Amino acid sequence: MIQSLQGIGMTSLRTRERMIKRLTEQGISSNKILDVMRNTPRHIFMDEALASRAYEDTALPIGYNQTISQPYIVAKMTELLLASSGRLARVLEIGTGCGYQTAILAQLVDHVYSVERISPLQKKAKDRLWELKLKNVSYLHSDGGWGWPDHAPYDGILVAAAPPEIPEMLLQQMAVGGVMVIPIGKGGSQRLQRVTRTENGYEVEKLEPVIFVPFLSGRK
Ligand code: SAH
Image (cartoon, rainbow, N blue to C red; front, side):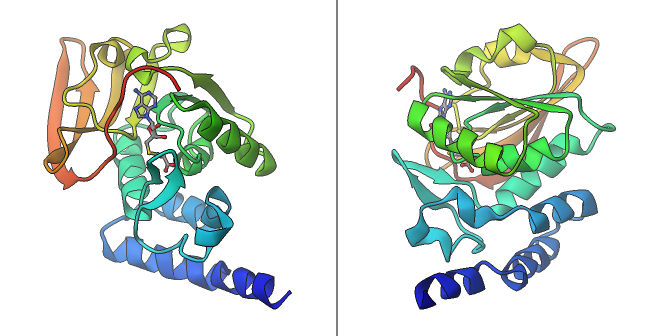
């Protein structure tokens, strides 16, 4: 009983508020995104043993050698994705993981199409989003290198694992005017990139250095 009450204390609104303050200090300025992150319980996306650390600004293990992205990265990628236009209709996410980024996106765009190569991770994520009553999400167990052609073109693509270069199939599935946010590079030297598809081709902005798990091929 005491344990669980302490658990509630650790994950209280005040703890979340501290996370939001830190995000603001780190340069996240979209109130829309900050509000969604304030109201989304991040601790339910991880194992109970780690739940008390859910609002720290760090990546944490979610099993299968994968990690939940740190709050700053989730906020930053979402901000980069939403920056250019109005509300996005269709967003493709590669790397469902524990589903936290998916849950944030689902509250900010019309529909999220989320692809994950590790089936049990995706299954858990799906259950959590269902509990949160986020129903505007479709899931596919597949190698995200293929994208999800059935629902293309996408206004936004967010990739949560780092390939050495931008996968061709993902470029093809972008709408004109669409934006992709993706970490590119190996191990120690990855950089966040934002790709915008124009009438004539693609514009690439190289942004800040980041650390992501590798983008792997095949399904598990
Ligand atoms: N946003 C997620 C990130 C999880 S880590 C979260 O916060 O939980 C990245 C995820 O990408 C992992 O779950 C990993 O299995 C997945 N992944 C890596 N390469 C992939 C690929 N080619 N296709 C689909 N998913 C991939």
